[in-house]
Length: 390
Image 1: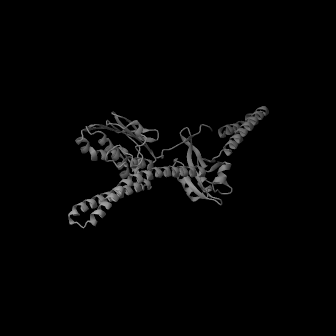
Image 2: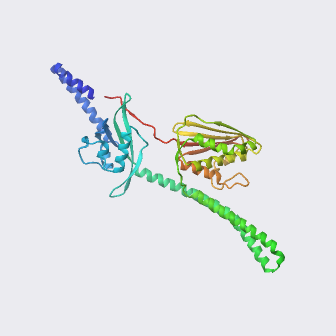
Image 3: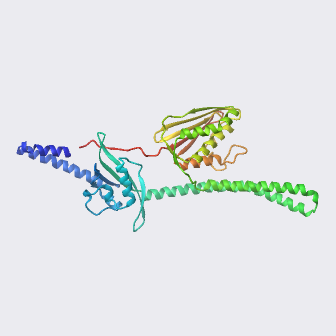
């Protein structure tokens, strides 16, 4: 549009009256189109700020005036971050624009007279023919959305804790019954005043001690399962992490007659991971695979980049899991092993979720099991708003 107007101005001395009238009509239509576009943008439920390549504000729609604390006037003389009064949002916008970068929208909480509100703020350069022509800043009020997400998480947590509490009650009932029986036996034995029953008493005390230790283990495991994890995440190469783990278990795999095949994808992006927790999660899956292949077999571990996730597959050729049980394997205290705690895969599920990932399982009896783990790639890649206008 600007290019068209400049050309028209240059041509004015050469135009006759009729041509000038036609030019005015064309410009009037263009102005109407611009006004329509501005009205459409102002009617959006999102706040929008458009700036020129030098970051000076060109347009602000009505919603953003309601959402953000802004300077009252003189926007056209201010750079975007200078017009925003909230220091945290201003710094976020300035850092993003000066780095010629865009990042995943960030949430900011603002205090208002009635309630606290949460705003998601995003920044994107406007690009034309590979060159940055301006800035596009968008603001969304996500207060209700975040509250609903929190309610949903609490509901999921409550449902999970209810299920777990029932499991814990069942697990505790058995050792408590054993303790009660052996205490009664001790009471009867003590009433006899016979020294010859000393061996029996020692046996009863030993059993009680073991059951108390079992109760303690159940409580410790329960607390681990219900407490939030304290993760310490840092950028990490998932292939390197898996390779370290494989080196650790390689001898055990060889002794069990299990052939290991690794298929790592090259040039994977770094992931934000808690190294110790993630190693423990993968180790739990590998230990399950070992238990499922008592007569040897094969274990395949592969990585792949797909969309915005790194896909990790751990596949064994073991005995498999019955179809009706696959939906329960991540539930606390559910186990198919005689001596299993039922918390190993619960821990795996929790670790993956704490990293914003997903975990799935595919299994067929007699053919083996595949665990599929999806871990998100940090959203730091540039996003550009492409504009092909003048």
